[in-house]
Length: 364
Ligand SMILES: Nc1ncnc2c1ncn2[C@@H]1O[C@H](COP(=O)(O)OP(=O)(O)OP(=O)(O)O)[C@@H](O)[C@H]1O
Ligand SMILES: [Mg+2]
Image (cartoon, rainbow, N blue to C red; front, side):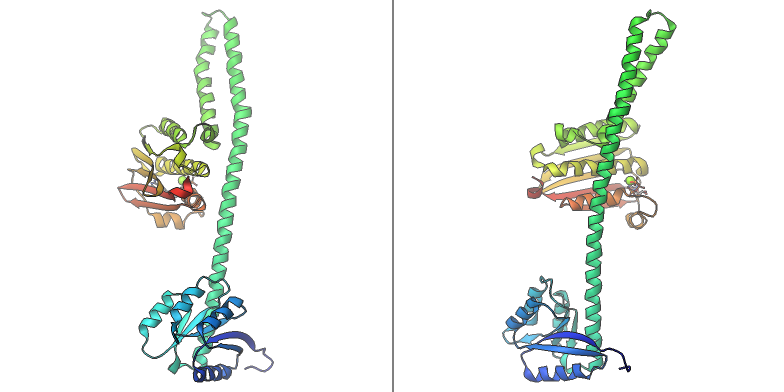
């Protein structure tokens, strides 16, 4: 140890039924100069588990052969505990299978007792503690990312609602007022007047613009979901979508009862269908998109398949965000945040399939 340098303190829980091994390990730990180990010793699995539950340890050294219990039982129980420190399994020579299984059960490391030395033990303990720290940091940042994604989707929905309301209240009503004014002027004009004919020709265009504004409004804020339900909304969307994409056919197979879809899933389903259809129309060069919504084998399943050119999914996902593409990410997030599982498959020349499944009990 360098003079003046503080010795780290590491709290060790040793679960070991053999007193000689305890004395040996305590001696080995005492040889380490960089760290001071405070060792608590428990002779059996039960009191060891109680101690783990109490918390406060940085590392646990667990003897694999503990009387009637084996270390795996303890590992299996400890895996669920949030307070559990990383666990290093100690065993005899030649227990390679134990090594493999211990790792499967979540052990941080595995040390053969006969080969134990101060540098080996010190390094194993340090690495195990660091790995747990990184794992916790990763879990924390994943959960922050989930919260961020959820609030991003909420903000997106409320922004869509705001734009939809402006479209409806300002633009839609303005167009309707213009149409009525033209109609009332027309009613007072001589029908054969050439100006009357020009004005009359404007009516279908204004009517078309009113229809488009209504569709934009409904796509932004699908109140139709509450009024008519998901089945009617999807049918409407599949009818309207190809009007803006000539040459594209959309076929819907909706084999599920309205009552089988939980109310909170309806907007999620609609948004995923919107994103998937937009992607197929923009990127795939497909001629046909099939949408199916069905309830079978305990799951509510949504599938959107196009017969387009396909794409490299991992490349698209890794460049998501960098090049602005958010559709795939938001489909996945929406599916997962609502308790579903999301899968996308794509084969060059054979199109793309987006699949989402929710357990039926959760979807009702
Ligand atoms: N059905 C599809 N067929 C072919 N390529 C696709 C398909 N869906 C997605 N892609 C590819 O994956 C990329 C990422 O899609 P994503 O929906 O995330 O973003 P985007 O469509 O580019 O932008 P945004 O959805 O934000 O408007 C697309 O740019 C496209 O290259
Ligand atoms: Mg997209």
